[in-house]
Image (cartoon, rainbow, N blue to C red; front, side):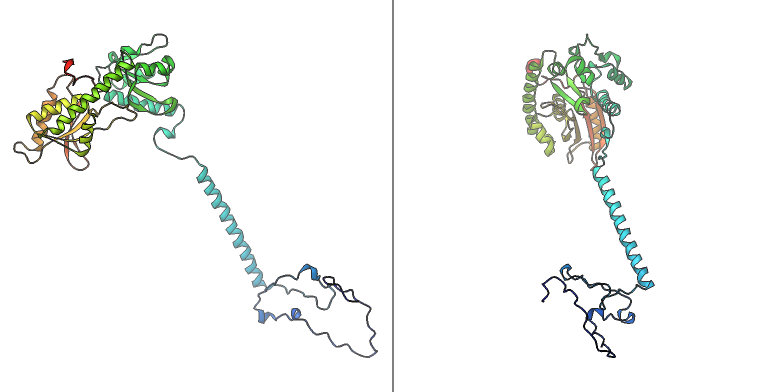
Length: 367
């Protein structure tokens, strides 16, 4: 009977062998012809296993293969390979863990973004208070909550210039500047604050912690915004006249600001007066504070004498300009007048007017 494919044939009964006859040894199969240790150099190469359908010969069969034992050097190399693999796996695990930590940890940034809760609120208030103490006129009445008013007083703002708002009797319209904190918005309501002070001249922080410095509008938001729009048009016309003045040289950026009506009326007036006496160069106008509303003008300028003209040198020209500006009266007396050396090496005279800007100075009907 023929064996079925894939099924090993069943061994039959042993054939009879005549007495005294020796059996010739069965020929060795290729699989049994293992090389000596010297031939294989103590290296063992294991080939692919035979398919399961072919079956395996019983252990008692003559052609059973016995894998030679590894030598001591081979065992040592195997242990080293296993140790190396384990080390590589450990390094990979540690690297992945470190990468996951870096990707999931919160970003670290500067300023109050590092702080939370009360710490962030204090940091924002400190910035706002320092700005108000430096930029707002001491003649202006500033309304604020109790904590902010105390901080402003500690920064040198006169007590007569502070109006502390209290629940039940808060009247910010008696002031010209409102420091809108979370406490003030809780007392008055956000809509009331916006209606009483529609224009922002500086803002600090964001969300519920935001502090905005606002211009009060005693006659209402509509009247203030109308006056601000009219003032922008007057500033544009005055700026165009300065650009046409042959005694004034203007940088490219300053030229754009003048044409756009972005310069405070007090600066426009004093620059025209300076040019009536001596040539003047407008190096730059200052940038607005963060969060300023449209129409709020720049209140500072860097000025210099015109080079290449007959007369006093640049230092003498700036000294004369400083003396001229210090001799002005309100509202044209600048809050800050100082000599500044710019990064490029040029020395300029920086003048800055206090907030809030006065509307209507360029309107002939107001004089």
